Amino acid sequence: MVLVLVAAAWGAADFAAGVGHSSGWMRPSGEPSVFGWVCGSVVLIGAASLTSLAVRGRAGSRLLLATGLAYIAVDEVLGVHERLAGDLDARSLMPPGWAAAGLLLSVAVFAAVAYLLLRDAGPRGACRTLVVTGVALLVASIAARFAGGFLAAAHRLPAGASRSVGESVAHACGSVGWLLVAAGLLARTRVKLDAAAL
Image (cartoon, rainbow, N blue to C red; front, side, top):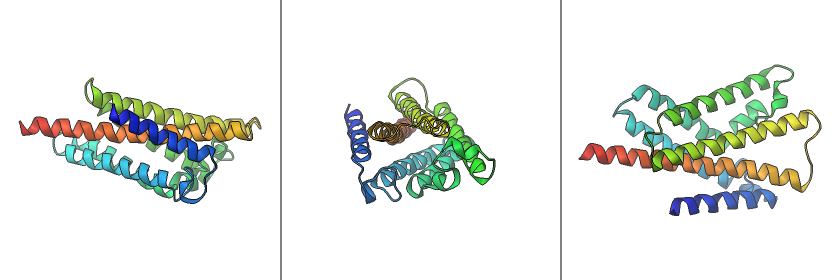
C-alpha cells in the first residue's frame, strides 16, 4: 500500500511539473532532469538486483535484461533516444536514415526488455503484479508518444493545454512504470534470496 502511494505521489509530481511548464532540473522531459535521474537510478537498482539473481539460475537472460536496463537507465539520464530517434517520433521513419535506424533500435531494445521483464516476473503474486503493471504503463507511455508522432505527421496534433496535458500524462506513466518495475524486481530478488537462505 505504501508503495502504491509513493508511486502515485511520484506520478502526480511528474505530471504537475510537466503541466506547470517547469524549467531546468524540474522539467520532466528535459536533460538533465530530477525525474530522469530518479528514473535512471531506480532502473539501475533493478538491473543490479537482476545481476544478483543471475548467479541463481537463468544467468544468460537475466544478464541480458540487466544490460538492457542499464542502457535504459543511461538513456533516462542522458536522453540517448532523443538524440538517436527524435524522441521516439514516428516522423523519424521518413525519409529512412539514421533517425529511422535509431528509432527502430530504441523500439527493439524496449521490446526485448519488456519481454524479458514479463518472462522473469515470477509466478502470481505482488512481485509479478508490480512488474506487469509497470510494463503496461511503460507501453502506454511509448504508445502515446508514437500516437503524438503520427498526429504531428498528419498535422492533427493539438496545441496549447490539451497537448501539454497529454505529454505530461505520457511522461508520468513512464516514470511510475519504471518505479513499479524496479520495485517488483527488488521484491522478487528479496524473495529469492530469503528462500535460498532457508
